[in-house]
Amino acid sequence: MPDQSRPPLPPAPFPILTSVQALRDWRTARFADNESVGFVPTMGALHQGHLSLVKASLAANTHTIVSIFVNPAQFSPTEDLSTYPRTLESDLAALSLLDVSALFLPPVDALYPSGITTDVTKQVGAFVEVKGLDAVMEGKSRPGFFRGVATVVLKLFNLVQPTRAYFGQKDIQQALLLRRMLVDLHVPSPLAHNLVILPTFRSRTSTSDGAGPGLALSSRNAYLSARERPYATVLVDALRAGERVWERQRGEGEGVVCVEDVLGAARAHVEGVVARIAALSSSPSSSSSPNGDSPPEPERDQVPHLSPLYFALNDPLSLSDLSGHLARGSGGAVLSGAVMLGKTRLIDNLVFEFELNPEEPKPRGGAGAGEGEERVAK
Ligand SMILES: Nc1ncnc2c1ncn2[C@@H]1O[C@H](COP(=O)(O)OP(=O)(O)OP(=O)(O)O)[C@@H](O)[C@H]1O
Ligand SMILES: CC(C)(CO)[C@@H](O)C(=O)[O-]
Ligand code: BAL
Image (cartoon, rainbow, N blue to C red; front, top):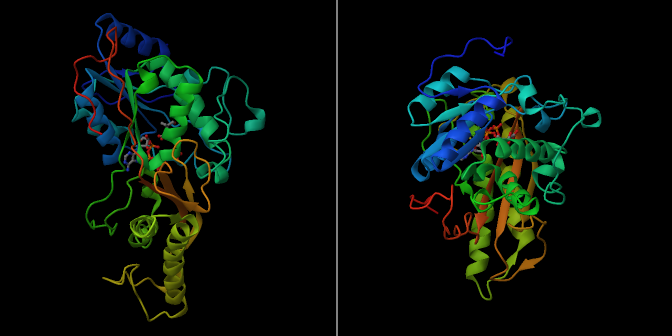
């Protein structure tokens, strides 16, 4: 049955699969040919970060399938489900320039046959939780978020049955939690060992709209106003301030790192920028940019509103909060943080002394292991 509620889809040089059956049929043909399938799940509004995942998948797999699905279950009732950027035409244009094999674009009822509401207390049907790992970092301020993510991603994995799946470091907690889900729920190989995490794609140059170098690309960056954009690198700059403390303390004496010093440096950076913005709003004639160069000259009532949400240092495997002093060889760490800039929630992270992609196990033969194919660069 065609989806009556959806307007006709623009043409694309690959099949756009809009039903579970169409996806299953597409996948069955790939199994028959013993071909490897890379999978890139997204919520659309594609940018270069997404496309870097697609390109990595194209390089390592015979076929690459992308999904676009704005998943209601990972939004709280007060979040931006209805206004989340939806840019299907330009997404298709971007994917059309790459050699993707198919796009999975399901309607909501295809993935949630029992229906779905953002109100967790009213939800019915099967859901997936990854306890513990969902309660720290992002999970503290977005309760229910990782339950929604894990649920939809397991559904997608069950349908696509990819050889490899690709996620971005920008959402590192998501990727590490999903890896745990694969292990704990005994998801079959080869996928079980093939959740690939790729580095955060960042804005490299000061762009014409004022975004500074280093800003992690994100679909929600579209919410940033022209006044806010020059401040959007505040988060990565804060993380780098923390990183400098980590590296300095590692290089000194016994190399013991003080967690509070790392977090304190990150917080201090944001507080410094908040103070500079406050000074701007109290002196209408003064103006300065977050970095002290090319001032944006905001007017008194248009001064951006910036507030820190959290900084955290976590064990990269258990995701448990780190505290105290960390000796060399203690297993590395994830330094992550979030700030609100106007109505945009920015997240970012850096990893220290931790390999994002442990070596893939050597293929032992058998269907779908992607034998003889190029491996993803670590
Ligand atoms: N800058 C980036 N670099 C690399 N991967 C990214 C980047 N941004 C997003 N991704 C990855 O793309 C995949 C799909 O993410 P999603 O569609 O939510 O985009 P997003 O930009 O993270 O959106 P949002 O602004 O809602 O967080 C995820 O694995 C995510 O980590
Ligand atoms: C993994 C994902 C596609 C699940 O909806 C989403 O959380 C995202 O885009 O990162
Ligand atoms: N990028 C992960 C999806 C979300 O933040 O809603």
